[in-house]
Length: 211
Image 1 (cartoon, rainbow, N blue to C red):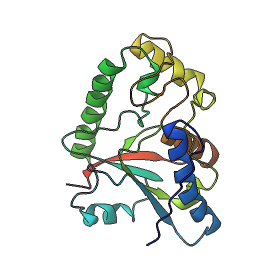
Image 2 (image 1 turned 90 degrees about the vertical axis):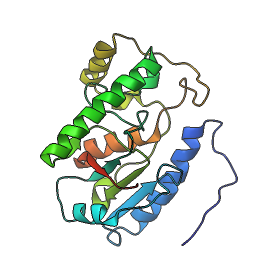
Image 3 (image 1 turned 120 degrees about the horizontal axis):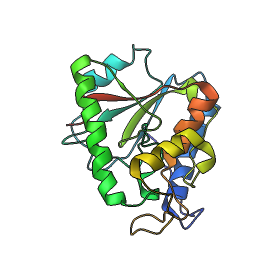
């Protein structure tokens, strides 16, 4: 196991620095292409540093219906900032009433995950992380993490769908934990580029990996 410590920030914005760190790890996979069929990105925090059920992860390694796979969490799916799923296609923080829509989107994804569990299927999305994701390496060699606001990656159709469902225009303002004038979740750009460049299938499992 190797630990790398970066003592020099590339930006005053948190997501820009996180993107650099994730790209550092991703570049290792790219430089050793063919060596690692899968790679994992994980937030080592109190959400995921729990007991892991490896049998759940193992069963998905032989399935071909995903290229990026995140998992449900208990008591609910929590990472609404990193989630893009039609019609909620962009960051909830960049629309009015963001607190209200955090709960609305959380209920929306949890309803989908309940139905997916009943049918033994996955939930297709535009972007999802939820603290842990596994990736099929070959589909992510032509993408990179970007913590900036990448409106250029969002199709007009998807952006309009989000505006309509929230009855809101785009807003760019500073919050306590994130500066919405300059920051977005770094996973969104990563996943959208992989879908556009390599046809990556971004999926969410209803299974709970960490308990």
